[in-house]
Amino acid sequence: MALEEVNVFNMADRQIKGSIEVVDPAGDTALEKTFDLEYEQDQNSGGVFGATGEYAVSVELTNTAIEENSQASKTVAIDDTDEEKIGVVFNTNEEYEPIVIRVGTTPKDFLEVAN
Image 1 (cartoon, rainbow, N blue to C red):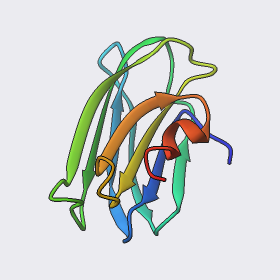
Image 2: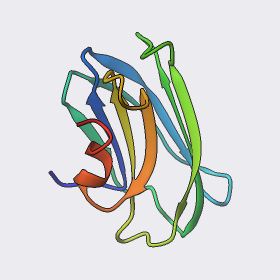
Image 3: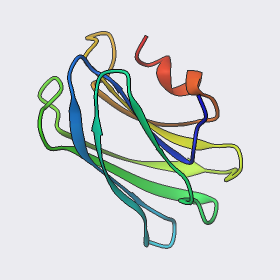
Image 4: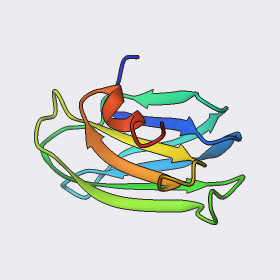
């Protein structure tokens, strides 16, 4: 699996539709995109990181809620724009948070919150 700068993974037991927005350290919208993912599908976006710093990530589901959650937001630090990626994982496994936003470098960094 090849990762881009921002990755959305559906590990929930249902179709997930929604939107994601990423705001860069300067306060500009770096990404604004919708997604429509079946179970175990992912969507990736490149060309988001312009500089290192704090990125504000917001996601909102439009067709469902997971454990009564239909939105999440988190500010994450990107220290290496060549290596680090942002991942959002939707999950219905009760052992994990329903919507996880984190920084990582490999698919395992993101998908370990769903398996």
